[in-house]
Amino acid sequence: MSEDNKKNKQLIIILGLLNGLMPFSTDLYLPAFPEMARVLGTDIGQITLSMSTFFAGSCLGQLINGPLLDKFGRKKPMLLGLSLFLLTSLGCAVASNVSFLIVLRFFQAIGISICTVGSRAIVRDNFPVEKTASIFSSMALVMGVSPIIAPSVGALVLQFYSWRAIFIMLAIMSGSLIIALSFFLSDNYIPEKQYSLRPKSILNTYTSVLKTPTFWSYSFVAALASGGLFTWISSSSFVFIKLLGLTESQFGWLFATTGSCLLISNQSNRYFLKHFPSSQIAIVAAFTQLFICALLVFISIHFFSVPFMLFGISCYMLSLHLITPNTMALAIRPFSENIGSAAALMGSIQMGLSTIVTVILSNFQQASALPMVITLSVIALISSSTLYRLKQKNYA
Image (cartoon, rainbow, N blue to C red):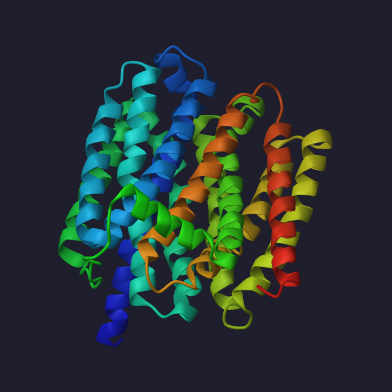
């Protein structure tokens, strides 16, 4: 292996871990929802709201942090963000009520969001345009470990400790990443010294990005894909623990199964990219996903059971990462300047939509899986129609 290839693989692993801390921050405490609701004297809907607040913090944080990455470089702002994440994780571990937890989760997300934006910007800094979709898939492969192991690890922690230990674990993870980032990540980006942090200048930059013809559409589809993923994440413990009666440990293994499908999806995407363009892969996957969602609605009404629901969700996950990395790469492909701002705006759109979806679902988790599967169906319908319109306009 050449020295350059070795460095590139090391970079991808570090970026994947940095990007993966955000999903780990949600997946790890999923099995603890019922216990947290009991200890904090609230209901699962309020605990789900702490996840929605996390998404809102990420949405706002990415808008704030994108310009900082363009102004000051990538590494130092990312270290600052990880430090904020570490401190707020410790705060969550000692939270005495759900309101305090919700506020801390908001600032926790602002801290980690800078790493999400920074990792995407670093890909565009270090790799040619035609390789970005493949690199995003490789990063997602590292990230894909999160839904496989996080709920199982969370369930294991709950067998020996309280839910508070989960947030202590997140603090330890962020501390480890601070060390890795400090010693193993070089910042090749030359900061734009002339970049202004005045609100008007930042607004003009974001407006310029949004005026790029394909950016909004592909970012919107990527956001819909993320919204679908977080629809599943935020509803999964309610559907399988509350409605279908799984134990926390059983739920962890089930979640790992669906997470494995994301890994398979990532690997499949890397193979398909050698033979087909990103746009073609994304549109075929979107229409396949629409069919799967129709199947999920049928299952929820007529065959609502663990095996059938697991089958439907697994098929959905197999299609998901044939859409996300490809549409993300297509969204930022036109940019050679303001990459941090473009990546931030894309991420903010993703997390903003995820916030809206989870807030809505937190009010409908009563006695059925239908709110979850109908949401997934609407998302798939909009995604497929948007990609079809892009194809008709020859943007695909």
